[in-house]
Each structure stands twice: as structure tokens, then as C-alpha cells.
Length: 221
Image (cartoon, rainbow, N blue to C red; front, side, top):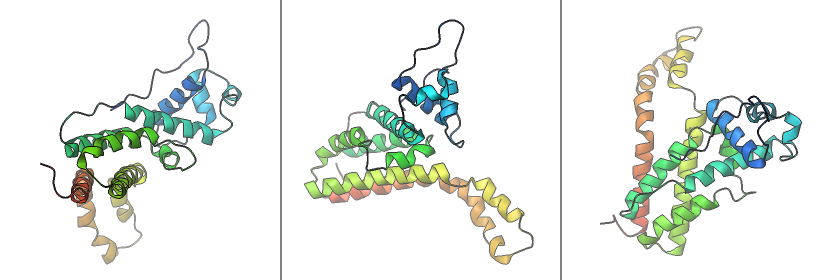
């Protein structure tokens, strides 16, 4: 997994750290990684980089611009993840696993990674295209495979980032004001959800690779 967060950014004795666009983005990624469920604010990032909040507005006009830059930063880091040599299905699996590990910690960045206003996905799509070229897909099927893989990966990251924890779902049933046969029937299902979620990405991964192999004319040897 690419390491995208850096040091604490706390201001020590002596001269304060030099402020730059890159340092602000790194600070934002650091905050998002430390507290993914807490909404990012300019003030929180400013505290991390040791600057006044207004100083950050010289580099970013608003919070959305900073979050978009953070999304680009995370995706660019994914491009540098080493992918082992081997048959393209194995490389695709490794690429998707690395992508899941990199995307899952940043649920707040998902809307910015899927936006069409910025080419945030360009490095990742370039890498993915290179992995799939040995499959011999037609131009149309290559475009379909790239779309399938990237949307599957982002969709899973969004789901994992925003879904309610399994224990909270069970607690909702326990807090019901009166017994309800319908909700009580869900208890066995809810009890199996943690194991299902642990298997979810592997299942998605297998189905995605199988679909691309079929587009390529059958399982790769």
C-alpha cells in the first residue's frame, strides 16, 4: 500500500515549517487518514501544518478544492504501488487489492475520485490499461473492462466507507420498542454479516476477473 500521509506537521520551536500547496495536501490526507469519519475542515488542516486557516486560502479557494487535491494525491500514490510480474489476471488481482487498501481509509474522498471535472483517475487508468493489454481485448471490450474494474473498485470503497457497522445494526434491533417478528427474523442474518463482509471483496474480485477473462475469450493459461 502506498504511504500517502507524512509526519505530524506540528509546529516546534524555532522557525515554523514552510507552507506550500504540497504540504497542505499532505496535511489534509493525514487528517483524513487519522479520523476518516470526522468531516475535514480548513481549520483542522491548518492546525496540522502549523498555519493560520486564512493562509490556506491562498492555495485553495475552498474546502472542495482541497479535497479534490487530496483525492488526486491519493490516486497518484496508487500509481506508484509495485505490481508483481506474471499473467495479467494475477496482476489485475494485485492491482485491485492494492487499490482497495489505498481507497478504503478515505471515504470522504470518494465523491472527488468519481468526479468528471478533474482527471483524478488518469494515472490509475493508465496503469490498468497497461495490465490489461496482454489480454488481447478489442478496443470496445478494453473500455468495458476498464469501466467495470474501476467502478467496482470505487463502488466497494464507497460501500465499505459508509456502511453501518455490523454491531450497530444488531443494536438497532435490540433497541426496538416492542418485539417484531419481522425484525427478529433478521437476527440470524445479521449474525452472519461480519463473516460475509470479510469475504465480500474476494468474491467481487473473483467475479470481476472472471468477467474480464470471458471478454478476452476464456481463462488465461
